[in-house]
Image 1 (cartoon, rainbow, N blue to C red):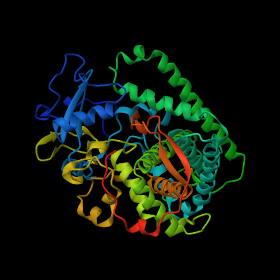
Image 2: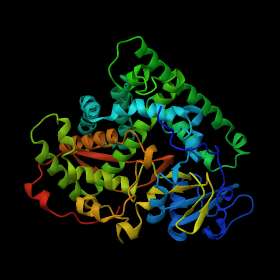
Image 3: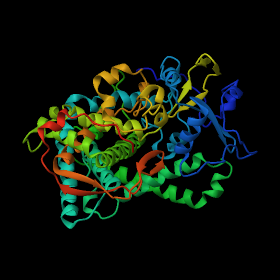
Image 4: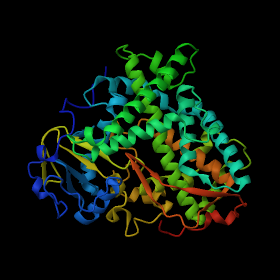
Length: 494
């Protein structure tokens, strides 16, 4: 079998003091309290946004300490590019990602680099995201989006605003469940989220809360939450076991689950174990819908806030798709401006807002900061992608034209990383991008989007990011004039 992605390194949380010999040279907040650390001005419900605020004040590399855990954060473009170097650094499984291991184990997202099941599963499952496979998923993506639009048509007729994050979660869960595993959760027939979603949100929230509490006190402070988390994990496992069992009793569908059950490694002939299949299914069902639902929700928010952008995107859909009732697979990638809208939304609010990197050997970061083998840093994607030195003085503004080809070529590498980096980057990124672009195109073709007048964007953090309380009003769309496509889009803030 192909080699794993790195040498065996220590597991579990390692505070920065253990890996950064000259930690004192890295800036930190000025008011550190004994025992508790840098908690002044911090909010346990928004650790990512807190770190973004600290980063703007402290610079491209900084550190924070809470209850004995010290973390080095990086958001400077040059330092982030170094950390993306696969010869010197690898993915670090720590913080909230490690907290998900009780349920996701050595699945693709949470496996340690040295665990053999990562490479085995990657080699078996990667062909499931080839062009041929993606073309096979496309009709089901269309069918699920039609179910969403049937629901939205009813809400529009009744004059009700739609719950964007809730409905995007239903959409993306059904899409990955049906394309990857032949399972229908019946999300659109429910008035409340499916229990799988409730359990998933519970596990993600619990993993996030573990990050901000002292390890010795967490079992006491989170006793009730811990019991709920055990119940949530048990429900996720039972659900997945049912999906797998049903497939084993039926004929195959040539999807991801069939690959897990039937495909052997091309070199060694190894198969995934039953336990690892459970881990992989949980990983895909969670990661395959949670981040895409957030990306779609943010994109719809910005389209509603910027009608000029929406008009230009809608005109592109009309021009590229014409009167075709159901766009073909190849027609989705031709929505280049719609894709820019999606990318710009992911730039401002990457739904996976950070990734951790660890040193493969002793090294020096930026020519200044020594790191021992296994030392790690957290790359703040959400701040890296707002760096004014890279994105301009208006980096906080929403402007899809930042992603026109010329603008992309003018930027340094490794400054746009919504799917992580290197060998451990998201295996399903092309699936997510195709799905999200298709959905945006179909929704733009049918609806005008109006925000609620007093809505201000607020962010829910649960390892991933989601706009909180986002509701939109739907109107029957008006035809876009041909001139819209050639009209420049003004830069505008949130």
